[in-house]
Image (cartoon, rainbow, N blue to C red):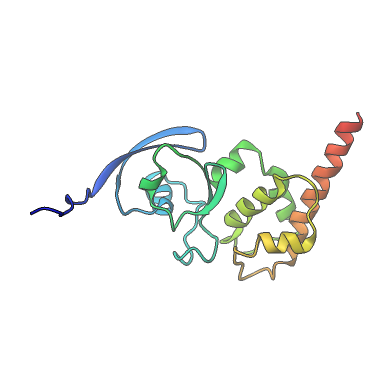
Length: 173
């Protein structure tokens, strides 16, 4: 019969880099990146909340940009660089931000915290001190049901100010 598609492959070999380490794994063609990270690689900091890309709990970096891992198929990440909260935490990149979250009590149940940290890290990577409204807007895709957001905004703002102060001090030295 002409014009028919070949049968879909159920599994494929996926090659990518996760948190700086080369990974090669067999994966179901329909498995989400979030499920792949959690179930196959054991990186459980990527949380699943809504599985519709709305809550932000599954936020990861894909080739340097934050994405919702529940909306991306693992198969789409062939050859990509993926960074999870574990990678950002282990590298020390967000140690000051994590400390600010702790100090400001910006985490309570902790479910949203990895996604919040991933989104905040992206905002802070631009440098400078964003206005509170800009912080709020940038984090608006990440839901928190516990904190009321004020402490989270405080933590991001204080981290931005501390980084700016440090940059000024280093420039003047």
